[in-house]
Image (cartoon, rainbow, N blue to C red; front, side, top):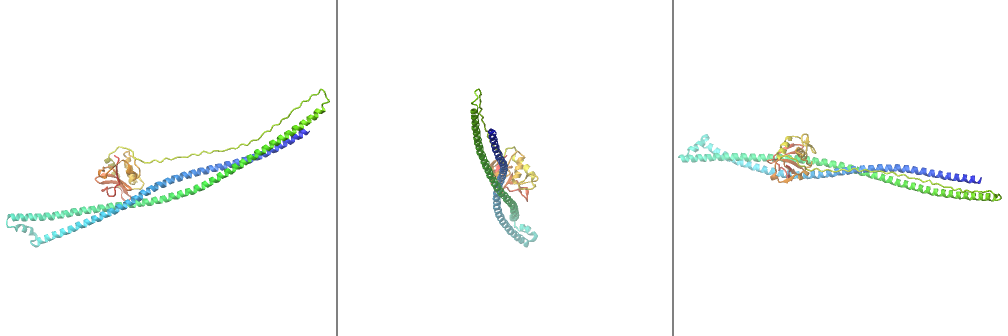
Length: 437
């Protein structure tokens, strides 16, 4: 009877310990689930941070490109201002020459009028004949005729010279005015591009600042998730340590109860042995009961996350070799004279800017050129302007053109003139001449 009571007490104690272990295990599982959720949220936040960083890197690259374009455009505007000032000086000098020629013409005209007036006042319509017949002999008549012819030739020469000089100066003055107007149109175009680039830069920088703010928020949230995970790990570890302590206490109690039961059993057996000493032929056997205890061990789960990074590669533009002749390039390019100028465009029919026009023309002959007027200063090989041949690329500050020969160029000039032929390749400062063919 005593043995049954002890066994029942032992069973109740072991059952109570199991209930406590199950309750602790349940709490650990809940924490593990919460930790898994927090880890997933942290992973999503890190993905968002990586995405924002990629977008910011892309817009930072765009800002750098726009800054470079803006520097080139501003330099081109300043260069055009200098060229316009120089052109104005040439115009003023030419106007002075025109005024001098007109003054010479006025003096020659007054002298001619005086001679004609003298002749008519001294003979009317027959003055020339009277002058010839006034000679006393044939020699004198021939001398008078020669003198008359010289006067006529002189007046004729003066008139032709005046007309030639006047026309030459007038034509040159018109040419300078045309070139100045073209430079002013280009200046207006470059200034418009400069304003557009500055607007784009302001927008990109505002977007970049917004990315910075979003990144700061995301990084703060990620830090909160990391702190929460650390707290959850600490709680799980504390529960596991408590479980281990409770398990050790339960096992110690079970061993104590088993020892008490063993001692009780030995006492009972001793009493039974004493009562059976009177029987001579009885044999007793004793058995030893051993109990073993098992321990519950908890397990923890962990989750892993893989991250992938996309890499991008910037490809620069460079010239590649092709087969063509300079004259063939010119013949092809002049087909598009009269088509529109479009900033950033590359279409020979619907619109191109200066570098886009040359890039598309040379692409027809198998050459790959950069869409940049400054970058074109490095393609092919350099030659002097005195050595320029048809097909060579004439490089200015912020502008490029194709040399046609005879001082002419074909180029996408500006929004006002479009693709055109200009008669003076040196109408503005030449920075380089590059030869590809």
